[in-house]
Amino acid sequence: MSRITNSIRNTFWGYFSKLLNLVFPFILRTVIIRQLGIEYLGMNSLFSSILQVLSLSELGFGTAIVYSMYKPIAEGNKKDICALLNLYKKVYRVIGCIVLLVGLLITPFLKYLIVDTYSADLNIYIIYLMFLLNTVSSYFIYAYSASLLNAFQRNDLESKCNSIISILQYGIQIIILLTIRNYYIYLSLMLIFTIFNNLLKYKVSKKYFSEYYCDGIVEDEKKKEIKKNVFALACHKFGGTIINSGDNIVISAFLGITLVAQYSNYYYLLTSIESLILIFFTAITSILGNSLIVESKKTNSVNFRRILFLNLWMTSVCSVVLFCVYQDFILIWVGSDYLFSEGIKILFVLYFYCHMARRTVIVFRDASGLWYDNRWQPIVSGSFNLIWNIILIQMIGIYGVLLSTILSMILIDIPWEAKTICGNTVEILFKEYVKILATNLILTAIISMTAGYICKFIVCSGALKILTKTIIALLVGNSVLILFFRKHTLLNYYMNIAMRIVKHLSI
Image (cartoon, rainbow, N blue to C red):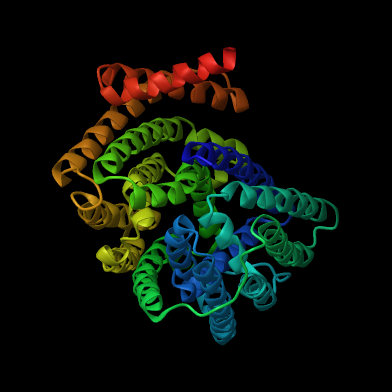
């Protein structure tokens, strides 16, 4: 099947699955706040962050295995694929044991991570152990089977499995919270459906790729390459986890779990919009991996510029929407008591822009397996972020958490990642890349202020106000970008694609 067919199929089902995993968790968070209290939501966010840190022991091994499968799949080498699956299975069992052991060892120290008081109904140790079992179960129950779906560009099958489980899990959890309001049954269902999800993906992988199974030994040279990639991915995972999970842990330790919940509400909305864009990149990663092997550097450079242009366009428009509706959405969702200041809102939008503007470079890095080339970048960035988190949160509170993260991306991540790709995988100068990002950031800021000013004249309220602001943000954002790039060849490229699609649909 063609790369385009796989890309469209993966993207469609990825968006469908993601839509379910945006709507249901949103409803679930709302039900938890209304039925149980915001401290339960804060506990959820805190323990999820702790378990993400513990999952560092996975070290990105799964990603390295999937990347190692690209070449034998292209060559039709069944023996190597089976051997890689067997290695994946064995290593994941060891990792599961490590996560369980370390997780149990830190249990006595949980009370030191919560600075404020919480409901007497909450047994933090039982809750934590249920989260721990949920994480550990994935390592033992066929987690390796999903690697076949990813490596063979069949992310759509994984998305279908996730969709089925999401509908069942969230539906039953919401009913439980609305009727008997039992938090422990809610957590038990999370564990049960994690197991069901892994079993379902195993059955699907056996149906479509039954000729591949866990058997054989990976050659020493291949093991050496995997170890090298795992080491590099471990560095990347460390940095990413410190930034994503460290914030919640630091906030809980210094400001309390109520502030964790408040922060996580803003972060949830941000990551929800991020995830809609990331589906596209997830869908094309394995496709780019194949392209980087079989196509010329010139062809891949053209693809890079096309994807970068589309990425920055989506990032700009979504940033404008966030800027216009962030506060109104939080106000309607959880109430005025949980609103942050306008300054915090702006920092969240800037956080979103910086994080998403990097996606093109990151997807090319992952598809080409260049994790080793910038292995120290996430270590430096994560350490910088954590140190300044602890310093600034004591001086300026939540502002410090966001500022330290934004500065780590601007000063370390963006330039370092670009240096890895520019001139190496693709023919684009580092200065040109930075100029493109800076120009787009300034343009996005201007569009945001323009759309924000227009939105001040809206007189309606509630959901209608959010809808109206969203429409204004989309119209202003896309109109200004079209006007600015009207003579750009890449805009013409995408306009031609859009016209061909419309013409095809009209036939």
